[in-house]
Length: 182
Image 1 (cartoon, rainbow, N blue to C red):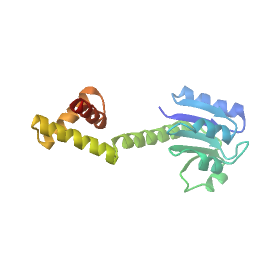
Image 2: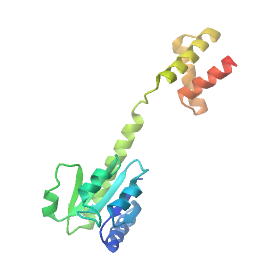
Image 3: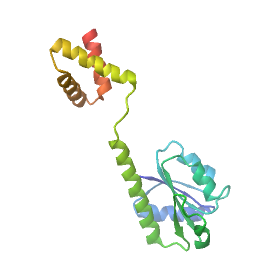
Image 4: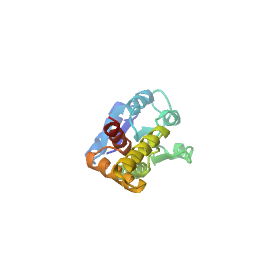
């Protein structure tokens, strides 16, 4: 579930937006009145959505947008005149007065985009260091010599052990090395 932070200059307005989102099944982790509070809550999270107005107590939306950790998206709620100024800078905008359905549908769309990005990152193969590659290669060579395996068989054996034990390939190679050398 995507973390949402609501930051508006008036706390009662921020709580109202939070209540609408929570009733619609979203996870609102923070409600605040300053950009600094929003940044503090966003730090340490991989991604999320910040719902804000054009101006908070301590900064405007563009300053907040620059300070958010990568992976965070912004939903700006402002008058149509102010929204016209911010097109083309990766900020989703909703014009005031706000329609509840527009808010829910927009946050849902943003949440789906973040979920797609997460899935894409998970599918991306991890890049191993030279030391990790060397450990895998050394484990395969030991298996090839001691167990008379081809390189492909040794690799498949490491993969199977890795899957069976719930460890990654590098950890499995390390276990093979410690057992065979010890």
